[in-house]
Length: 202
Image (cartoon, rainbow, N blue to C red; front, side, top):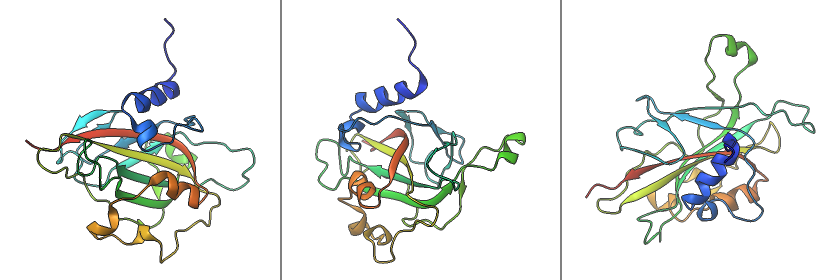
């Protein structure tokens, strides 16, 4: 049996976990264009469905990804990064899902000079539109999927309007969000995905 290439492995993991179609629409099929590496300050990583603790993911992670060369884009591509939980308050009863945990725009691949130093972290060039909210699944609600999505922005001057829902960050504002609809609204193209689980304590 031939080994799957890493990008096909991403799609298979997303399908097996139900991230496709719960967060990413099944049609048109998602074709990953990069690997998204997500590392928390604790040293723990999102590994396409591994389980982390709340303390593992308590602080905003760094991200890295393979820079994409897009033939029809003459300027340096920029990206929007999202983290969302479709399982609020639980996967069995996701009446508040998706829960918007993080939205940040203007993400850039590291400059080529940093490849010599080994620092491959992407650059977050703007303040977060939705500040990072760590996973906090309610007690007894089982495993929650925390999905990180990297979208290519339509232009380097892309921004989210001041009145947009993504800039309202009280708990009541974060629930019942939809990453795919958000992406469609702003013409964002999904290029990479990763996810992990955190389990609500019994």
